[in-house]
Amino acid sequence: MILVTGGAGFIGSHTCVELLNSGYDTVVLDNLCNSHIKSLERVERITGKKPVFIKADVRDREVLDRVFSTYDIECVIHFAGLKAVGESVAKPMEYFDNNLNSSLVLCDVMKKHGVKALVFSSSATVYSGDNEMPLYETSRTGNCTNPYGWTKYMSEQIFKALCTADPDMSVVLLRYFNPIGAHESGLIGEDPQGIPNNLLPYVAQTAVGRRERVTVHGNDYPTPDGTGVRDYIHVVDLARAHLCAVSYAVSHKGCDVFNIGTGRGSSVLDVIKAFSRACGKDVPYVIGPRRPGDLATVYADCTKAKEVLGFETKYDLEKMCIDAWNWQKNNPNGFAD
Ligand code: NAD
Ligand code: UFG
Image 1 (cartoon, rainbow, N blue to C red):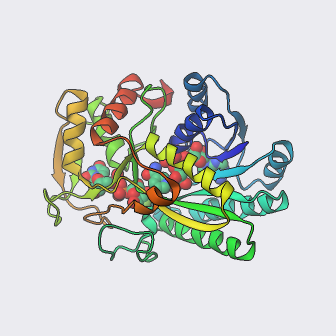
Image 2: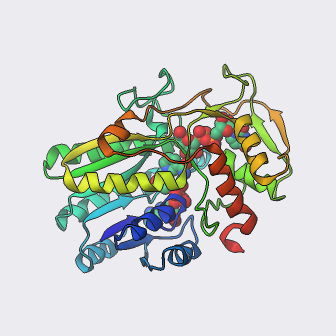
């Protein structure tokens, strides 16, 4: 049995599909603070299997204790956390409390129950902004520009220290780049609350008519077309990376870290053009000023994940946009429809 914290969310729900399709039983623990229970009903529709669901906060030690007593947990995938960069600047204590205390309580209860394998959702945001591209797992980390980034950086430190203290412990830190796209069924996908901060949901909501136009945050960067370049990865590829990580975590000891991206960069205009092709109409955009804190170019070297985890991506930007559009057009208002 795999415990999936935050399993009702964007990446968690797609990972549940891959886990269930691969024969794993799953328990999802999520407080639904940024997700909808419908996502798990859809997971059941896709897979024909029902994940066990517990509505609770990961920081609730008693509930967690009961979960580990009730189910034979082999490995935990810890997705639960708050993730909005701007909100973390406005509400830092909420972010430190949620993201750090959930990791601490989880580790403590795992220790009590002798569960030794964990996969953690880290982020490319832990890399310092002054690195050369591509980013390697050994590139400089720290100098985070916001509290969200620090929570990922600090969580990584907590897990590393835990593995040093307990040589039987196994933690796989996955540093995600930019997950986008949706399951190709169009039944699950990204459903941000309010005005999206991230590029792809903004483009998708513009294409479906919920927003007037996309603002491109700057076209004077030192990139081929002047707009920001990122390493977008299809969420289903990312979900599959978790299968590799779980296999690795249960068969190795110690703490290891992997970049999970495609190793290819795409600009904001590349994304808008690919999405326009996917939806069959031009997505309107205007050029605006740079967004404070943004880097010109961020992409991963993914050699380590390929060589050590045996993980490779399958899908390109066209497919990411086709699947994101399929989700958006079938669910213009997300799970609220
Ligand atoms: P998401 O918000 O869709 O999913 C997170 C889930 O965790 C939500 O269902 C939310 O309700 C739940 N949750 C939050 N705090 C909780 C708590 N204390 N107890 C129980 N449940 C709680 O986000 P996502 O995009 O699926 O991201 C999953 C993880 O990956 C997060 O840790 C995020 O920081 C990390 N990550 C995401 C991205 C990205 O671009 N989406 C990039 C890098 C890392
Ligand atoms: N962008 C626009 N217009 C928008 C939104 C974004 O032009 O409306 C641009 C950004 O300037 C950037 C690119 O699109 O060049 C991607 O921006 P996102 O906000 O989608 O993604 P980021 O790379 O800025 O941030 C993401 C996650 C963070 C994480 C970071 C680390 O949202 O949580 O990756 O790699 F910390």
